[in-house]
Amino acid sequence: MSSDVIYNYKKVDELVTTAGQPTEDQLKAAYAEGLGAVVNLATIDPRYSLPDERAFVKAQGIDYYHLPVDFTQPTRADFQAFCKLMDGLQGKKVLIHCAANYRVTAFYSLYAMAELNWTAAVADDFIASIWEPSEFEAWANFIRDIRVDIGAKS
Image 1 (cartoon, helix red, strand yellow):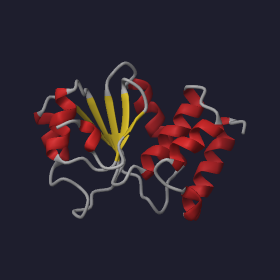
Image 2: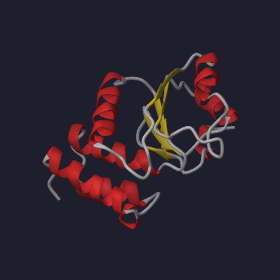
Image 3: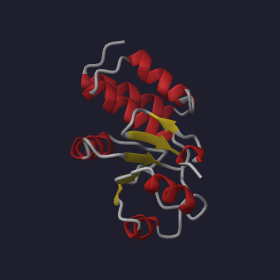
């Protein structure tokens, strides 16, 4: 098995992958591919979450970070915590996931605009490959507000 079968899998580059909720077998496959860290932006919900993802990931020898983002109300503080974490994970092979890769594509694209010189068009394409945040007012507003905060140009 390869990690590219994880729900809504998106390989950004050789070090960063985004996805929806992986299974235990998919996490094992990612570990076999050199995964060094897992970042989970989902809230804990038995419908989507593994029973004890933190313990499972750590047992594989992988670093685990949980930054729960309420899907109905993403915040600037959530984004700031994400940016700080991503800055600290530079050079590590990272899987960033949530339930369906909605939160993650939004957060990662904004981070990439702020830190990796992505244009708004590249960020929009990255998000649109998974979902349409304009269908969710909280997310449309959040993305707009963060882009203003980071001084993004269209």
